[in-house]
Length: 587
Ligand code: ATP
Ligand code: MG
Image 1 (cartoon, rainbow, N blue to C red):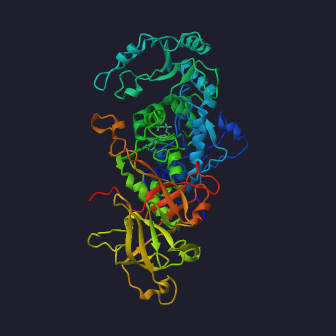
Image 2: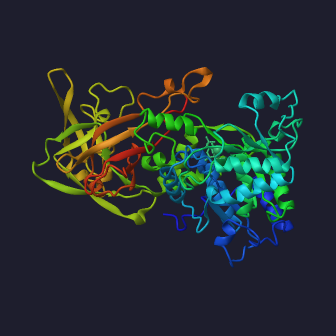
Image 3: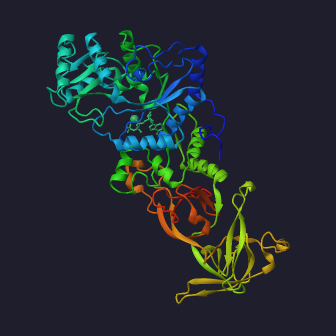
């Protein structure tokens, strides 16, 4: 186990964001900041000094779905910077849209970020807590001629916005007076108009080459109940208006987002400048920095698709171990340390790229290999009878808990006359180079005795139902002279009389195509029909005591976790997190 669970897996690799942060710290860009004169979180921090040497970042999910592996990249980045540069990272729920947000999602997000090993202390915020301030800010813009109520229809607005090659046209309502706009905006807020009748727009420049500066909408009418603000509001701020304000109120220094917001940066800066020059916000203002989002082959990282997969029951809920949600990854047996290792390995850049799922699996293997205790499991059981071993007798063999960490000791595994072995470890007509059990051949039963195969029993249809062998009593592993037996095969086994028989789920990739839905196909057509297989396995008895979320390497098979939902005390069921080797590798 690592000592400090927040510690990075390795020394962090530098990247362009770290360079910006280091330059800002060196130049003292954020020195002199304080909480004074700020509404919002400032109140919660009343009297507490704001460390001017520290950076502030935030992770700002919209609570309209569960977090996925892409979010893990953003979480590790934001919380990692705060950790490495002695700052704070806020968890902020961007709940400006009243229609899609739910408490269930808020709770799931809290769980997931905590599970990844990060702590935000008191810095948990909701954008909806700033609605009053945002409403004041909008009125301020109106008073200073920076915003107006537009009463064009949605189609007119779209037509007049122009295109990449054509400038936009001014709305006929653009020249409304500040008084008229203020009055209208107050009546809109009071609920005098239906959804869509008006929008409040920033007055910037309809001829700007950057379309996002052509008088973007900043408030819209929504007669909706908000999950926290209730029915108080009939207007809701647009995300692009709300987000910069949230950052500024929380005194964020570096507002890190994905590349699709690059075009929005001029508006981000424009808005904060207007409010700062009006004295509504304190300087220095936050800086938006964009990085490339994570695209993961064989996984869909879109909330819309994840919601569809869950709602149409292509998977068994948000925490289905096959889903790329963090709740699913956790249930599957992936580890927070593995995710942090993954985030370091993929790095941060401005260039869009695809990461193969195998990179994530490899990070999980590396982490689990170092920490998971070894256990024995037979997943496809076939009976092995040792004809010259006394019936009713049993004895202990000793197996190391971790081959590279002898300090973790050994455990006893019972040995007896009838054992379970893997079906594939016996062959009646072995192919060339097969060193396991076949008539006349000897193998070592790992941590136990050397046995020589004498034959097998078959049922009426010719299927092998039991294998017979004889053991050599002086060949027991760890006893003097045992090494005198030279055999090429070494197979694992579980005593039939002592085995813990239980359900094991073998999970594989949810999609069989690297880019589900590529070429205009419905991405659902690319679902892998074999992504979940349930088997009845025979495990060594020690596994009966596994607690939910205990992780193990089942020797020769992979890494498994005791399912955190379906396991009962004394009756765990196991999920396969990842195989020992990449079975999807080409060639
Ligand atoms: P949507 O835009 O559909 O709501 P989203 O995945 O962008 O979905 P948010 O809740 O807005 O959801 O995301 C929260 C944060 O996570 C944002 O800062 C966003 O940039 C970041 N993020 C989302 N997806 C990825 C990804 N694939 N890689 C890296 N960061 C991501
Ligand atoms: Mg988003």
